[in-house]
Length: 622
Image 1 (cartoon, rainbow, N blue to C red):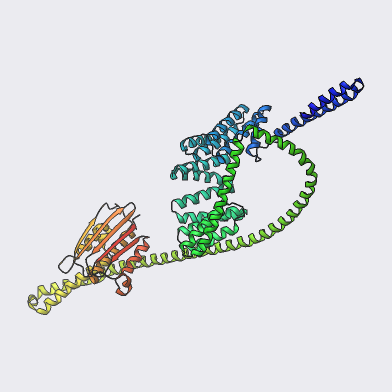
Image 2 (image 1 turned 90 degrees about the vertical axis):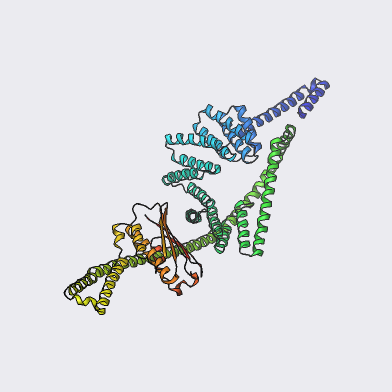
């Protein structure tokens, strides 16, 4: 306004000097008036352009958002007001941590979206409010809003948005600590994404599953999922996600205490991760590398990565503090200071315009040079990355092939074991029938012949040789019967497992046998024939070991069920044995272990010299 004051003074002076200068004064006043109108026009043009150039997908500073908000109020642009309030709400919550103001701005945005009839804006704002709720600990409120959005998107059949909402509900339940519900909605998101084939959502879901598996110590599932993320992100060329999947593979191997593999994959993750200053991902890699090297007792290397982690962490904290200070200064600065800044900016605009033409040429030259250098850099980096990724994929394929080979070998071993055991039982049954039907019948016939001879020659009874032969014949008949029953217990087929075991124990009563206490609880009504036979053979083998080797005087056998398992506990008070010399003792426990492996069960043996033996066996009875 200074030039207006000078112009008025000049006009007065000219007017005083005489009428001859009136014409000159008139033209001076006209010039000043045109100059003022020009500046007013430029001001309104600038403000209109500012409002017109607003783009909801662009990034703005806190100060710029407030300017746009003020101009939108003047123009009564309710659509822009709604969008800017959402951005301000995000800024207040994410940057300034002022959640009260954040919720206030979200509510303002909702009101303007409702006025403009923008249902999409209303739904997206509600989703943002729900996300802010579970971030601040209001889990039930967040879940209620998200469930309402599920109903809306289900009715509209908007599968993409519905999958995203299911993923948000999963995160809300996980934040609340309800892992069962979290997994339920994560599976729903996965099911919908199979129709969408959205690889970005899929990788985010899989990363979320990895973290859940890690928290629940389900390390095999976690590492399998991490490999899946690696394959998908490698195929899509997403280097950041490739690095993240390799980081998780390394971290899981650390949890499994496989430190060489952990170091290998963490270093691969570090090499592939795109360079960014103040990277949180790189900070985590340094931290885990320091920890793994420390666990391997390589303290010098561990200390090196610990220092890298500390340096990067300090840099991130300093940047965060500086950003918070700057944002608070922008938010809470005084009006006078803000006005002064605006005046300085306006003055600076004119100076910038004068230098713009000179800088433009310099920028074009610098940009061209940078473009050439960047092209060379990315070409080299691309081929280097391609070689590195190909090498990693080859190594992973080799590991998968080795694992498949091991699984195939195990299957072949189990198949061979099953054939051997089944063949043994078939052969036992055949031999038992032959002994019983053939030799047993023959011996019975011989005994009848002896009795007929005795009836005709009664004086033979007094002969010592006859009595000895008759006694040996009785022993032979009993021995054939015993061998036949041991080879194929008839009570097992006719009565079941428990009566068969009782029959086995009853045959071992007498002074020459130990006391056997057999107890059983809550036995299932039906057990598979092969399982019953295997359990019978295991107990038969254990009793035989106690009789032949342990010199036991007391034996305790207990059988009960837990869920779908038979639990067998066997104890004797014999001489025990050294478990390290089992093979040299020749005690037949390898046969027992073979049958338990066949049943996919487990066995724990506890024995020491002079302290008896205790055996705990668990097998599935279904």
